[in-house]
Image 1 (cartoon, one colour):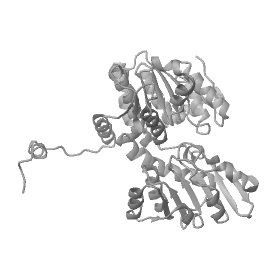
Image 2: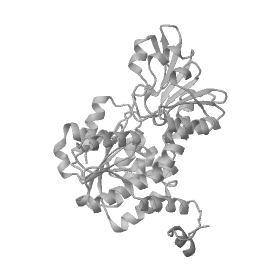
Image 3: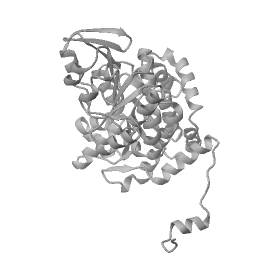
Image 4: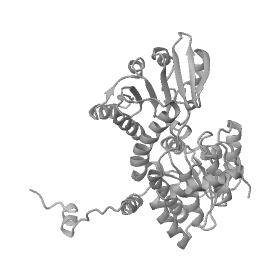
Length: 418
């Protein structure tokens, strides 16, 4: 088995982390048991480009239990947990190509090594795997049955391909499942982004003004959690409906130009490019901190930040201080990459449980239906969402009511009125 990880001797620590996460991933464990019996993915090759964490280890172990042959690479150069990567190789016997802090050249080498596996199914977080296939390795597409996408940014990229009629095989938008974005994006990103900021800086959030760029599900979650820590929140948006929602949720809403001189901490969660730019940096107060919790490191214009700076020093691990030509200092966290995965451990396992349950069941859906799927982006079915939600409630010891026959009849009729 080919693989490329930092050091297999790190596997002992990684194995413990994987086991700890498994205890909080009850839905995935239920699916794993079912997979072991039915082998719905027997002899299928799955190439996965995901954050290499203890939660992901439990996902690939579940896919293997279903009969799949899995290969894994990182979806971000700074999110790989080297001890977990080592354990996946040594203990789970699954090929991994990922090393923490690998450069861009090695990152794409690892993606291509994963694709050398000639997958039937791809599994992505950010669409780098799919993009590489479309840009460089189109010959692989003829044997690919379908793929799944984990994050908002990736779904945007893939829907763009589909709209241009360039998508080479069907994709399941796992991110858009209710049991994914309502929970993973809101509660997962909300907590883990705060976790990353605090671990990197040890800053007290109470009393700080936090500027949240973007009020999608990730922005909502982060804004709510930061407010819970005592921070004053300003939201910036381009969508009038989301801006109105942020206002009605009790947050200030301003343009970034208005917010720039007010913020102590800025966090981008938009999925778009250059949200924080030169005009904003020049307006920021001395010592303002900027970070990103969107998938790619493009939301902060770091190239321009470097150009307008006289000096750059690292003041803490993953904390860089840029002294501008006006002598103000801007503090960049985690190189502008995903703060929650670079400076912390990403989402809690309890939340990833539902996201990875969706990934697992998406693979089964592709395996069963690939012959009739078109080259477009599909939503996760309502039945799958309901199944995962019920399994999660069951694991938490919670029961809910069921509709009576009378109630079902009432909801399906038009005759009964006032």
